[in-house]
Image (cartoon, rainbow, N blue to C red; front, side, top):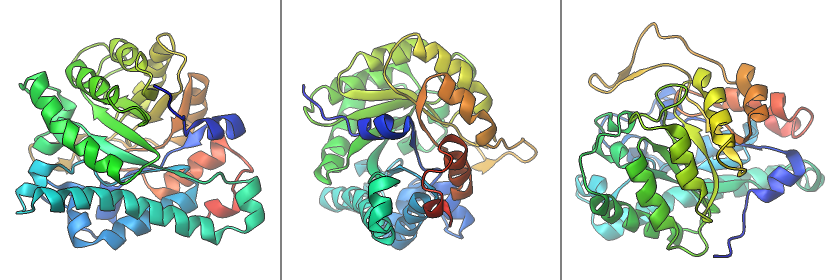
Length: 326
């Protein structure tokens, strides 16, 4: 397998790549109604312009990589809305195109000199959400699916096929809560000869993924695949990230991914954020994450373009400052 690693220009030039922040929770902040099992994928049907505009805001804030709005998109989920497989595949591909269009629009706003000197052309990563996201019952934070590996393969494979048809720069296999799903995804990724991916796990503490299995073991499994160009964590409390990254660094020399949530807790039963749970900013942790090996750094749930702008200013002072103003 001879993959071209799309991350390398960013790592060679600036040492880190800045990821975007939350899609769904920021769309809600902007007035979108995301109630229901499709979550942010609902807007692929109802308001794709809102998704494109948010991607553009993240690029303008300083993101080097946008993650498509397909975390909760699946053939089965769209079928519940009465869509055919062809219509469902078209929506997944639309999600990638929306991010690509936002990137093109962003690049057109930069003077030619800045395109060459200060901002590398951003990437688009197609989000491959975990099986638990489709279930919409909070199991992505438990990993207790109770299904066979074959069932997981059969569920993931057509989504990968559909997303790759849109030619994203790479895949973001994210919020993986258990070793079983990581094994399935690595097996599938190894079948695609030119599809680089990162795998990021959701973690419940400083050493374990949400299923209770050891994060380091999950990292070791994922990093052994030549298709995996980076590995790490997302949708995890910021305070847990540094020790998790340090344990990952002992298992692999590959770039590490770190895009925690805001530190608030989600109650899947009531489908709401728990009042009174503190919110963490990302920037106070950013230097420690980089020192621990993180090379792709951004935000997950409840983070905003302002958080990404602050991250870029902290990690890449002086690079892209004009373009990082909203």
